Length: 270
Length: 87
Image (cartoon, rainbow over all chains, first blue to last red; front, side, top):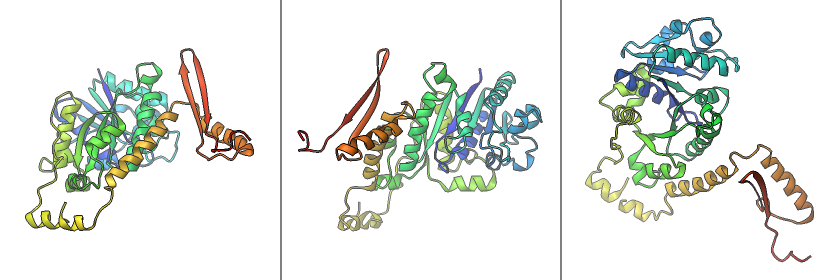
C-alpha cells in the first residue's frame, strides 16, 4: 500500500518545502521507499532544498505530457538509498498539471512499490495546491504561530474536508495533522507569540510536531542538505521526532521551553 | 517578566489579542464554509433592499443555510435598530 501525504499550508513561506524535504528524507532513512514531488509548477524549489538542482533533466510535467518516463524523471537521492525526488517544471503554463496526469503518476509510483509519496504543495488555493491535496490519504498542515498563517490553515482544513477524492467518495475528507514551525518558546513565554496549545485549540486538530526557530534551517537550505540530517540542530531533531510520530510512534514534544535566562536578565527583563 | 517589563505597564499580551481575533474570524469563516458561493452576494443584495426602507447596520443581517433532514433551510435574521419597530 502506498500512502500519499500532502504537505500544505495555504500561506507561503511557512516551511512547506523545508518540511517536505525533511519528512521525506526521515521516512526514507527508516528504509521506506519514498518519492517527494514538487507541485509548485513555475516556481520549482524542492530540488534546491534537496540539493539535486543540477541533476534535474526531466520534471513532473514532462512525465504527465509523456515526454519522459517516470523512471527517467525520478532523481535518486545521493544520501538516502530509498529516496527519490520529482522536480516541478519551470513552465509558466498554469494548466500543465491535470488531474488525470497526476493520478497516472501516483498510480505508477504505487505500482513501482513506493511506500510513501510526499506531495509538496505550492502556496495558495489554486490548481497546483488543489491537485497536491486531491489524492492524499493524509495531510500535514504546516502552520506558523502567527495570525495570517493560522487563518489560512483553517481555510486549507476546510478544503481538505470538502475538495478531495476522499471527501467526494464520502470517506470523510483527508485527515490532517498540524506541524507548527518557526516556534519561538521565549516569545511564547513572554506572551508575544501564540502557543502550541493556542494553535491546537483554534484549529481543532492535533499537532504532529513542533519545529523550533533554528539557525540550522537556513544553513540547511544554503547547503542543500535537508535539516533533518543535521543531528546537532534542534530543528533537525524535532523533524526526526515528527517522522516517528507520523509513522505511529508516541513521543513527547521537545524544545517547548525557552532556555533559562541569567540572573540579571531575569531581574531586568529583555 | 522583569522589572523593566513591569514598569512598562503592559496591557493585554499580544498573543492573547491574536488568539481572540483568530477565534472570532475562524468561527465566522467556518460558519459560512460549505455553503453555496452565492450566499455572500445574496446577503449583500438583501441588505441593499432592506436598507432602502430601514437604516440597518452593515453587519445586521445574518444568513445561514442549515440542513434539516431532507431539506435545506435558509435562515435569515435582521436586527432592526431600536425604537423604530412600530413606525
